[in-house]
Image (cartoon, rainbow, N blue to C red; front, side, top):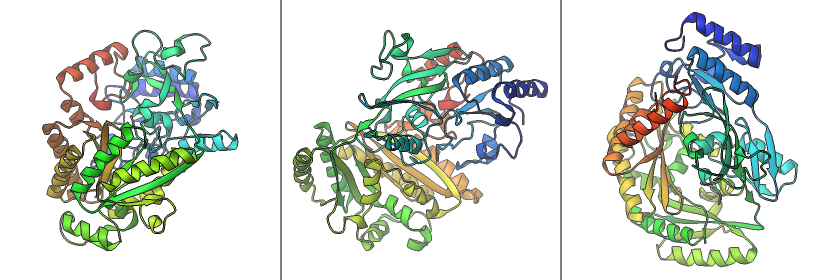
Amino acid sequence: MLPPGVSAENFAAALSEWRTIVGEDYVTADTDRLAPYSKVMLPEPDERHRPAGAVAPASTEEVQAVMKVADKYRIPLWMISTGKNLGYGDAAPATAGQVVLDLKRMNRIIEVDETLCYALVEPGVTYMQLKRYLEANNIPLWISFPSSGPVAGPMGNTLDRGVGYNRYGQHFENFCGLEVVLADGSLLRTGMGGVANSREWNVYRWGYGPWVDGLFSQSNFGVVTKIGIWLMPKPAVSLGFLCGWNDDDSMAKGMNVVRDLNLHKVIENGVLGHTMYHIAQTYRRSEIYTGPGAIPRERVKQICNDIGLGIWGHISTLYGTEEQVAVNLKIAREAFATTGGQFAVQGEPGIEKTPFHHWNLNMTNEPTLTEFTIYNYKGGGGSSWLAPVVRCEGSEALRQFNLMHGVLDEFGFDYIGGFLIGGRHAEQLTDILYDRNDAEEMDRAYRCYVKMVEELHRAGYGIYRTSTSFMNHLAETYGPAQKAFNQKLKRALDPNGIIAPGKSGITI
């Protein structure tokens, strides 16, 4: 496969020049060696996302040189950090024929400042690598990570505006300073990084003049090679709790309580999940339901009750001194009592039989891959995440949930998801699971996703993150003005369109 519009002669020349830059072993156009960059979980054939090659630089200087070659020959590069964007596109490019710019060899933890609680890292650093570094050096700082924490990395997740679970869980609110290689190979350090010998690069994000860091999030305007991330001081005490409900209206009341407690900083994190998400991690679908279509709501409730759980549960972890935690637990317990929910605290009998343990690990610096057992629920390797945003109001959350549930019912897919609470907003993360070996189910999953986007848009809800299959669909929902603005920026910063064409629906 050749990159679009590139001759075999020019592609061979580029490969040769890249080998001189990064080494023979780190450039390939061989089909077998490209397999790790070709496998997708999307509801489309692999061929639509098959790369033409891959190149793996080991330093910022090598990235600059690689970019200059790509720009010279007009070869599109699809950048990845760890390549573990599971359910959102994995390591494969948005369109066939791009060359994967694999940054996993750039895996240095450049600096950790224990006093000001930040780290400066390269793209290939994983959350688990950073956690082990902190532990090995007795640095009392915690990381916030997504469900794929052991294998994913802070740069890729932050730039895609991913979400974690402790008090620093809104990752894009907790980074500071980027180093970026532009399409022509030039280098930009954002914020205070433009000041020679600055020691404030990773502690004050604004710098002077326009703040441009956001331009490099969910975009294809540059290749980020360093990022500063803020880390959470290890608390003296942490204590988790759970509140569960057995009907949707009570969940909506619970959402309002969560919001108010969050805005008053009584609690600083929270997952409000549907129990089907836990069930999908624990059982195969054939063990709980063998009928046609999506599992009916009443049957879902019965399944949840049969294993001793309500259909919704909220989990938070309190941080601070013993005195702070005790006071905040009392406030939270009294607030949740108004919802009629079942309240339980870490260490109490029975709580370990709930989904509490896994989420509490996520909230207390222990990455796991527990959630990815959901891929055993149906089998067949198909997964497409959907992430609409909703005001943190119970009535709105319930309205959005019912809308999404209705579309899933129509296409025969179960609701597997819940809400991550951000204070004034929540993200309703939902995974459509399907068998990629079944062409009919693949097609149905694709049509389900597209209709979900359309229905959410029609109801006034925006989706903040999607997979490589649906980036153009989402870009359309944000209107022509934003699309035209992004295109102007793309043409100014990358006039030959070599950086990740199609990323977030942005092209020249």
